[in-house]
Amino acid sequence: MRSTLRGLPAPRHAVGFEPDLAVPAADGSLLVTDRYFPIGAGEFPAVLIRSPYGRGFPWASMYGLPLAEQGFHVVIQSCRGTGGSEGEFHLWRHETVDGRATVEWLREQSWFTGVLGMVGPSYLSYVQWALALDPPPELRAMVTQVPLHDPHGFYHSGGAFHLEAALIGAVGMLHQAKGFGAFLRGSARLQRHFKRAARTLPLADSYLPALGGRVPFLDGALAHPEADDPYWVGADLGAAADSARVPVALVSGWYDVTLDQTLAQYHRLRRAGVQTSLLLGPWTHNSALQQGWPEVFRETLAWLRAHLCEDGAGLRADPVRAWMGGSEEWCELAEWPEGARDTGGARWFPGPDGSLGASPETGAVSFRYDPADPTPSVGGQLLSPRGGRRDNAELEARPDVLVFTSEPLGSPLTVLGSVAAEVSVSTRGLSADLFVRLCDVDPKGRSTNVCDGLLRLSPDGREPASVTVPMSAVAHCFGLGHRLRLQISGGAHPRYARNTGTGEPEASVVRAVPVEVTVHLPSALVLPVTG
Image (cartoon, rainbow, N blue to C red; front, side, top):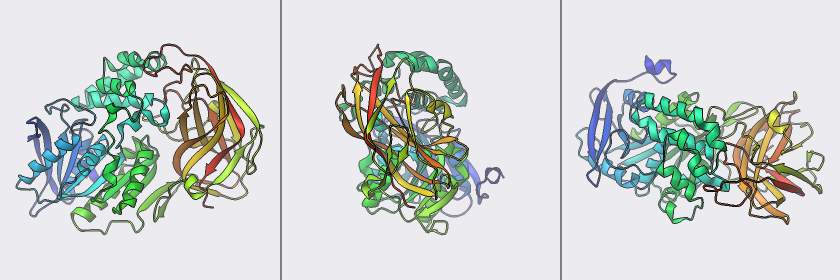
């Protein structure tokens, strides 16, 4: 009844539970593990879930019970240094060897049939990529939900530190494995101190009251902003997709903080010839596992049955299922396109009068970014409940936000793929960021964010330079009478840490100065238009 009430399939089996199993890692550390299993005659495949966030809530109710009810052994393990497992937790250094050790242990279990799948969101997907670098023969399927494969990209893509995601993510890493109560207390502490932490310099010290002390993995991320820094060697597991042999289902949302990582892996898997499916919903990183869970669970169950049980009846005919914003309906596609610039996308040109049209214009428009009053983040790819689609009216009324708006559309316009902005820009200052956003303005004038992106500019860009600001992928239909709107500003705080304008290292800088940014025309919004 519990699964039926949550909109999930009716149970096929009663479920047994075997808690606190000790699985030896290669170095002898014991990894605490729970097993949920179907009660009944017959052999059942296994699903492995490895988590630094504990083994109980929410994974027991999301995976343990429901998947065991459907006929799978479900093995939920606490990563080393978390949830009672021995050893010291590290963001990436142990997951491959610990995953392999767990498979070695599975081989010794009488109930293990030699058929294995892996499931899980966020870091629970990272551990899947870790095992997929050299997958054991037993691994037959992966379901990566709102997946992460590149920790550096989680903290630093675009050149600016992802402040809000870093702080919220740290609370989960620090407290969730200690129980739901500890997680709630840690979350409440962050909420009390968040505004001050986000506005205090230097960043390396500002978070201490919010998180209760030093956090080594956060300090490491702050101190090493460059992707090619030796600190990050071994962290990016994207290469697992290049030589993958395991069928992979990917699940993400248009406002997921790891959407770009999901699509990067999708294209790598496709180029490697791996059987792949992609589900893209109207979700954030968290809402995909909440409001989107019935849809996500159906996708997960169908993929596991197809590849672990040889029952493909639930698979979609088309491998891509995407939510079309604007029309608010699902569409199914044979594949997901690469992006606007790769397909010669349509260009829309901002004008000095705030227009957005089909013809290039000349001129220049400027704004002043003041880190003492930073341009706020409104909706978009956030870990907090403030993410997703939001009314942008207050944001667009600010003097530090340039707004360019098209005439009402005479027919619907469908955008499918990755969006970009090609901007000619100069700055008066030592450092600046460029934040660009595409919005849909309805006939009543409500402006709702569709996608966006940020790029840190090179220091002291006094002469105009042409830069491309990648924006996230999108499936969106701008309706009849709607207008396209392009925003250009100097940041989105606290989603991104403020650019202090000094050019000094982000972790240690203690002062901030305003900067003037000039957008030179012609510049362009590049859209992958299909109709």
